[in-house]
View 1 (cartoon, rainbow, N blue to C red):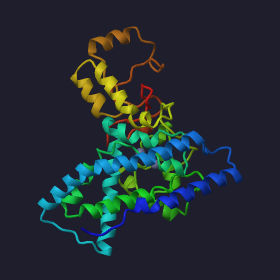
View 2 (cartoon, rainbow, N blue to C red):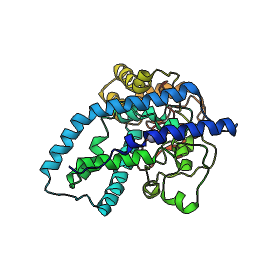
View 3 (cartoon, rainbow, N blue to C red):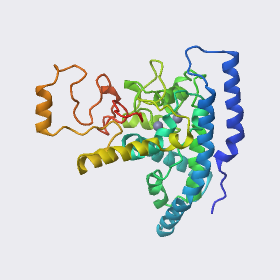
View 4 (tube, rainbow, N blue to C red):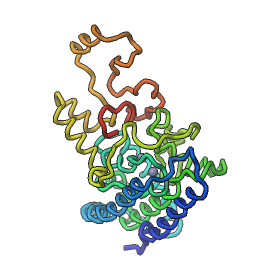
Length: 329
Ligand SMILES: [Zn+2]
Ligand SMILES: [Zn+2]
Protein backbone atom coordinates (compact mmCIF):
# COMPACT_ATOMS: atom_id res chain seq x y z
CA UNK A 1 0.00 0.00 0.00
CA UNK A 2 1.65 3.29 -1.07
CA UNK A 3 2.06 5.75 1.79
CA UNK A 4 0.37 8.88 0.43
CA UNK A 5 -1.06 11.73 2.53
CA UNK A 6 -4.72 12.81 2.65
CA UNK A 7 -4.35 16.28 1.14
CA UNK A 8 -7.81 17.36 2.37
CA UNK A 9 -7.09 16.72 6.05
CA UNK A 10 -3.68 18.39 5.84
CA UNK A 11 -5.23 21.43 4.16
CA UNK A 12 -7.94 22.11 6.76
CA UNK A 13 -5.84 24.74 8.66
CA UNK A 14 -5.20 26.55 5.36
CA UNK A 15 -8.93 26.37 4.50
CA UNK A 16 -9.80 28.02 7.83
CA UNK A 17 -7.08 30.68 7.54
CA UNK A 18 -7.89 31.65 3.95
CA UNK A 19 -11.64 31.79 4.69
CA UNK A 20 -10.97 34.19 7.57
CA UNK A 21 -8.68 36.28 5.32
CA UNK A 22 -11.43 36.48 2.68
CA UNK A 23 -14.06 37.46 5.29
CA UNK A 24 -11.77 40.21 6.63
CA UNK A 25 -11.05 41.41 3.09
CA UNK A 26 -14.80 42.01 2.58
CA UNK A 27 -14.84 44.04 5.83
CA UNK A 28 -11.89 46.17 4.74
CA UNK A 29 -12.76 46.45 1.05
CA UNK A 30 -16.51 45.91 0.57
CA UNK A 31 -17.72 45.15 -2.95
CA UNK A 32 -21.35 46.10 -3.49
CA UNK A 33 -21.62 43.91 -6.58
CA UNK A 34 -20.24 40.77 -4.93
CA UNK A 35 -22.49 38.19 -3.24
CA UNK A 36 -19.99 38.22 -0.35
CA UNK A 37 -20.69 36.45 2.95
CA UNK A 38 -23.77 35.79 5.08
CA UNK A 39 -23.21 34.27 8.51
CA UNK A 40 -25.92 31.56 8.38
CA UNK A 41 -24.94 30.58 4.85
CA UNK A 42 -21.25 30.26 5.75
CA UNK A 43 -22.03 28.30 8.94
CA UNK A 44 -24.21 25.91 6.90
CA UNK A 45 -21.46 25.45 4.31
CA UNK A 46 -18.86 24.71 6.99
CA UNK A 47 -21.28 22.32 8.71
CA UNK A 48 -21.85 20.49 5.43
CA UNK A 49 -18.07 20.22 4.99
CA UNK A 50 -17.55 18.75 8.47
CA UNK A 51 -20.48 16.36 8.00
CA UNK A 52 -19.11 15.20 4.65
CA UNK A 53 -15.86 14.14 6.36
CA UNK A 54 -17.88 11.83 8.62
CA UNK A 55 -20.14 10.42 5.90
CA UNK A 56 -17.28 10.00 3.42
CA UNK A 57 -15.40 7.93 6.02
CA UNK A 58 -18.51 5.74 6.28
CA UNK A 59 -19.05 5.34 2.52
CA UNK A 60 -15.35 4.63 2.13
CA UNK A 61 -15.79 1.15 3.67
CA UNK A 62 -17.86 -0.46 0.87
CA UNK A 63 -16.15 1.61 -1.87
CA UNK A 64 -12.64 0.59 -0.80
CA UNK A 65 -13.85 -3.04 -0.67
CA UNK A 66 -15.03 -2.84 -4.31
CA UNK A 67 -11.86 -1.04 -5.47
CA UNK A 68 -9.65 -3.56 -3.66
CA UNK A 69 -11.50 -6.49 -5.25
CA UNK A 70 -11.08 -5.00 -8.75
CA UNK A 71 -7.42 -4.17 -8.03
CA UNK A 72 -6.79 -7.77 -6.94
CA UNK A 73 -8.47 -9.08 -10.09
CA UNK A 74 -6.59 -6.94 -12.62
CA UNK A 75 -3.14 -8.14 -13.74
CA UNK A 76 -2.09 -4.51 -14.38
CA UNK A 77 -0.02 -2.44 -11.94
CA UNK A 78 0.91 1.27 -12.06
CA UNK A 79 3.96 1.93 -9.83
CA UNK A 80 3.93 5.03 -7.62
CA UNK A 81 6.73 7.23 -9.05
CA UNK A 82 6.83 11.00 -9.39
CA UNK A 83 5.96 10.91 -13.09
CA UNK A 84 3.29 8.22 -12.77
CA UNK A 85 1.67 10.27 -9.99
CA UNK A 86 1.47 13.19 -12.45
CA UNK A 87 -0.17 10.89 -15.02
CA UNK A 88 -2.56 9.54 -12.38
CA UNK A 89 -3.53 13.11 -11.41
CA UNK A 90 -4.27 13.81 -15.07
CA UNK A 91 -6.32 10.61 -15.47
CA UNK A 92 -8.20 11.24 -12.21
CA UNK A 93 -9.01 14.79 -13.35
CA UNK A 94 -10.37 13.35 -16.62
CA UNK A 95 -12.62 10.94 -14.70
CA UNK A 96 -13.63 13.79 -12.37
CA UNK A 97 -14.83 15.79 -15.39
CA UNK A 98 -17.17 12.97 -16.46
CA UNK A 99 -18.31 12.22 -12.93
CA UNK A 100 -19.08 15.90 -12.36
CA UNK A 101 -20.86 16.22 -15.69
CA UNK A 102 -22.82 13.03 -15.00
CA UNK A 103 -23.85 14.42 -11.62
CA UNK A 104 -25.37 17.44 -13.36
CA UNK A 105 -27.32 15.65 -16.09
CA UNK A 106 -28.68 12.56 -14.29
CA UNK A 107 -31.18 13.60 -11.64
CA UNK A 108 -30.48 10.87 -9.07
CA UNK A 109 -26.78 11.84 -9.24
CA UNK A 110 -27.68 15.54 -9.15
CA UNK A 111 -29.55 14.85 -5.89
CA UNK A 112 -26.12 14.26 -4.33
CA UNK A 113 -24.22 17.08 -6.03
CA UNK A 114 -26.95 19.75 -5.72
CA UNK A 115 -25.68 20.35 -2.17
CA UNK A 116 -22.54 22.01 -3.51
CA UNK A 117 -24.63 24.39 -5.64
CA UNK A 118 -27.25 25.23 -3.04
CA UNK A 119 -25.64 28.43 -1.73
CA UNK A 120 -26.48 31.79 -3.27
CA UNK A 121 -23.10 33.06 -2.13
CA UNK A 122 -19.79 32.27 -3.77
CA UNK A 123 -16.91 32.45 -1.37
CA UNK A 124 -14.28 30.13 0.09
CA UNK A 125 -16.81 28.68 2.54
CA UNK A 126 -18.92 27.58 -0.47
CA UNK A 127 -16.08 25.22 -1.40
CA UNK A 128 -16.67 23.41 1.89
CA UNK A 129 -20.39 22.85 1.14
CA UNK A 130 -19.96 19.19 0.22
CA UNK A 131 -22.55 16.40 -0.17
CA UNK A 132 -23.19 13.77 2.48
CA UNK A 133 -24.31 11.09 0.02
CA UNK A 134 -21.24 10.66 -2.18
CA UNK A 135 -22.07 7.04 -2.94
CA UNK A 136 -22.43 7.58 -6.66
CA UNK A 137 -19.01 8.83 -7.74
CA UNK A 138 -16.98 5.63 -7.36
CA UNK A 139 -18.05 3.93 -10.65
CA UNK A 140 -16.52 6.82 -12.64
CA UNK A 141 -13.06 5.98 -11.26
CA UNK A 142 -13.33 2.21 -11.65
CA UNK A 143 -11.47 2.26 -15.02
CA UNK A 144 -8.39 3.69 -13.23
CA UNK A 145 -8.40 0.83 -10.70
CA UNK A 146 -8.90 -1.67 -13.54
CA UNK A 147 -5.82 -0.15 -15.24
CA UNK A 148 -3.76 -0.92 -12.12
CA UNK A 149 -3.94 2.34 -10.15
CA UNK A 150 -3.78 1.48 -6.44
CA UNK A 151 -6.91 2.59 -4.51
CA UNK A 152 -4.70 4.59 -2.11
CA UNK A 153 -3.07 6.39 -5.06
CA UNK A 154 -6.55 7.22 -6.39
CA UNK A 155 -7.58 8.53 -2.96
CA UNK A 156 -4.50 10.78 -2.95
CA UNK A 157 -5.28 12.15 -6.44
CA UNK A 158 -8.92 12.77 -5.45
CA UNK A 159 -7.84 14.70 -2.35
CA UNK A 160 -5.42 16.83 -4.41
CA UNK A 161 -8.23 17.58 -6.88
CA UNK A 162 -10.59 18.65 -4.08
CA UNK A 163 -7.92 20.82 -2.44
CA UNK A 164 -7.14 22.51 -5.78
CA UNK A 165 -10.80 23.45 -6.12
CA UNK A 166 -10.87 25.29 -2.78
CA UNK A 167 -9.22 28.53 -3.92
CA UNK A 168 -11.34 28.88 -7.08
CA UNK A 169 -14.47 29.59 -4.97
CA UNK A 170 -13.96 33.33 -4.68
CA UNK A 171 -15.16 36.60 -6.18
CA UNK A 172 -12.03 38.35 -4.92
CA UNK A 173 -9.85 37.12 -7.79
CA UNK A 174 -10.70 38.46 -11.24
CA UNK A 175 -9.30 36.92 -14.41
CA UNK A 176 -5.77 35.50 -14.33
CA UNK A 177 -3.19 35.57 -17.18
CA UNK A 178 -4.71 34.20 -20.40
CA UNK A 179 -2.38 31.19 -20.66
CA UNK A 180 -3.37 30.06 -17.14
CA UNK A 181 -7.08 30.65 -17.82
CA UNK A 182 -6.77 28.57 -20.99
CA UNK A 183 -5.41 25.47 -19.26
CA UNK A 184 -6.56 25.54 -15.64
CA UNK A 185 -9.84 25.86 -13.80
CA UNK A 186 -9.91 29.34 -12.22
CA UNK A 187 -12.23 31.47 -10.04
CA UNK A 188 -13.62 33.05 -13.22
CA UNK A 189 -14.44 29.66 -14.83
CA UNK A 190 -15.88 28.27 -11.62
CA UNK A 191 -18.08 31.33 -11.00
CA UNK A 192 -19.74 30.43 -14.31
CA UNK A 193 -20.20 26.84 -13.08
CA UNK A 194 -21.99 28.05 -9.92
CA UNK A 195 -24.21 30.54 -11.79
CA UNK A 196 -27.89 29.89 -12.38
CA UNK A 197 -28.62 32.06 -15.37
CA UNK A 198 -29.37 30.59 -18.82
CA UNK A 199 -26.14 30.58 -20.78
CA UNK A 200 -24.06 29.61 -17.75
CA UNK A 201 -26.08 26.53 -16.70
CA UNK A 202 -24.24 23.21 -16.75
CA UNK A 203 -20.93 24.55 -18.00
CA UNK A 204 -17.29 24.36 -16.89
CA UNK A 205 -17.28 20.96 -15.18
CA UNK A 206 -13.47 20.67 -14.97
CA UNK A 207 -11.72 20.04 -11.66
CA UNK A 208 -8.09 21.10 -12.07
CA UNK A 209 -8.00 21.49 -15.86
CA UNK A 210 -10.55 23.51 -17.83
CA UNK A 211 -9.10 21.90 -20.96
CA UNK A 212 -11.63 19.04 -20.66
CA UNK A 213 -14.49 21.53 -21.10
CA UNK A 214 -12.77 23.06 -24.10
CA UNK A 215 -12.28 19.59 -25.63
CA UNK A 216 -15.78 18.24 -24.88
CA UNK A 217 -17.73 21.41 -25.74
CA UNK A 218 -18.96 22.46 -22.29
CA UNK A 219 -16.81 25.59 -21.85
CA UNK A 220 -18.26 29.07 -21.49
CA UNK A 221 -16.19 32.12 -20.50
CA UNK A 222 -17.35 34.55 -17.83
CA UNK A 223 -18.87 37.55 -19.61
CA UNK A 224 -21.76 38.84 -17.48
CA UNK A 225 -21.79 38.83 -13.69
CA UNK A 226 -22.98 35.42 -12.42
CA UNK A 227 -26.06 34.97 -10.24
CA UNK A 228 -25.14 32.19 -7.88
CA UNK A 229 -27.32 29.32 -6.71
CA UNK A 230 -30.00 27.11 -8.22
CA UNK A 231 -32.64 28.03 -10.81
CA UNK A 232 -35.09 27.65 -7.91
CA UNK A 233 -33.29 28.15 -4.64
CA UNK A 234 -33.85 26.30 -1.39
CA UNK A 235 -34.86 28.30 1.65
CA UNK A 236 -33.39 26.15 4.41
CA UNK A 237 -30.22 26.15 6.48
CA UNK A 238 -31.06 22.80 8.08
CA UNK A 239 -28.04 20.60 7.15
CA UNK A 240 -30.14 17.43 6.90
CA UNK A 241 -32.56 19.13 4.49
CA UNK A 242 -29.70 20.66 2.49
CA UNK A 243 -28.21 17.17 2.15
CA UNK A 244 -31.41 15.36 1.16
CA UNK A 245 -33.96 17.79 -0.33
CA UNK A 246 -33.58 16.60 -3.91
CA UNK A 247 -33.98 12.92 -2.93
CA UNK A 248 -37.25 13.94 -1.23
CA UNK A 249 -38.33 15.79 -4.40
CA UNK A 250 -37.52 12.73 -6.54
CA UNK A 251 -39.50 10.44 -4.21
CA UNK A 252 -42.48 12.83 -4.46
CA UNK A 253 -42.26 12.93 -8.26
CA UNK A 254 -41.98 9.13 -8.48
CA UNK A 255 -45.09 8.79 -6.34
CA UNK A 256 -47.05 11.17 -8.57
CA UNK A 257 -45.74 9.75 -11.88
CA UNK A 258 -48.33 8.44 -14.31
CA UNK A 259 -46.35 5.46 -15.62
CA UNK A 260 -42.98 3.70 -15.60
CA UNK A 261 -41.68 5.77 -18.49
CA UNK A 262 -42.22 8.93 -16.47
CA UNK A 263 -40.73 7.28 -13.37
CA UNK A 264 -37.55 6.42 -15.32
CA UNK A 265 -37.37 9.97 -16.67
CA UNK A 266 -37.85 11.57 -13.26
CA UNK A 267 -35.08 9.37 -11.88
CA UNK A 268 -32.49 9.20 -14.64
CA UNK A 269 -32.92 12.21 -16.92
CA UNK A 270 -31.88 15.78 -16.20
CA UNK A 271 -33.34 17.60 -13.18
CA UNK A 272 -35.38 19.84 -15.53
CA UNK A 273 -36.92 16.95 -17.47
CA UNK A 274 -40.68 16.95 -17.96
CA UNK A 275 -42.73 14.11 -19.48
CA UNK A 276 -44.20 14.79 -22.93
CA UNK A 277 -47.95 14.99 -22.95
CA UNK A 278 -49.76 12.01 -24.51
CA UNK A 279 -50.89 12.91 -28.12
CA UNK A 280 -54.60 13.10 -27.16
CA UNK A 281 -53.87 15.27 -24.12
CA UNK A 282 -51.44 17.43 -26.13
CA UNK A 283 -54.06 18.00 -28.85
CA UNK A 284 -56.63 18.92 -26.23
CA UNK A 285 -54.14 21.25 -24.55
CA UNK A 286 -53.14 22.95 -27.81
CA UNK A 287 -56.80 23.50 -28.75
CA UNK A 288 -57.29 25.58 -25.62
CA UNK A 289 -53.72 26.89 -25.42
CA UNK A 290 -52.78 30.53 -25.95
CA UNK A 291 -50.86 31.58 -29.07
CA UNK A 292 -47.35 30.15 -29.54
CA UNK A 293 -44.59 32.09 -27.84
CA UNK A 294 -46.58 32.81 -24.72
CA UNK A 295 -45.54 31.48 -21.35
CA UNK A 296 -48.14 28.71 -21.32
CA UNK A 297 -46.89 27.07 -24.53
CA UNK A 298 -45.96 23.48 -23.59
CA UNK A 299 -42.31 22.64 -24.05
CA UNK A 300 -41.17 19.39 -25.63
CA UNK A 301 -39.57 16.86 -23.32
CA UNK A 302 -36.10 17.83 -22.13
CA UNK A 303 -36.19 21.13 -24.02
CA UNK A 304 -34.62 24.17 -22.42
CA UNK A 305 -36.84 26.85 -21.00
CA UNK A 306 -37.34 29.87 -23.29
CA UNK A 307 -34.18 31.92 -23.50
CA UNK A 308 -31.97 29.18 -22.09
CA UNK A 309 -31.16 27.31 -25.29
CA UNK A 310 -27.47 27.83 -24.76
CA UNK A 311 -27.74 26.18 -21.37
CA UNK A 312 -28.07 22.65 -22.65
CA UNK A 313 -24.93 20.61 -23.06
CA UNK A 314 -25.32 19.62 -26.66
CA UNK A 315 -23.54 16.29 -26.49
CA UNK A 316 -25.56 15.21 -23.49
CA UNK A 317 -28.83 16.15 -25.19
CA UNK A 318 -30.28 17.17 -21.87
CA UNK A 319 -30.96 20.30 -19.95
CA UNK A 320 -30.33 19.69 -16.34
CA UNK A 321 -31.08 22.84 -14.40
CA UNK A 322 -33.16 25.05 -16.68
CA UNK A 323 -36.86 25.41 -16.23
CA UNK A 324 -37.06 23.12 -13.25
CA UNK A 325 -40.59 23.04 -11.88
CA UNK A 326 -40.22 22.06 -8.24
CA UNK A 327 -38.85 24.05 -5.35
CA UNK A 328 -35.66 22.03 -5.21
CA UNK A 329 -33.91 24.01 -7.95
ZN1 LIG B 1 -21.20 21.15 -10.15
ZN1 LIG C 1 -17.70 24.57 -6.73
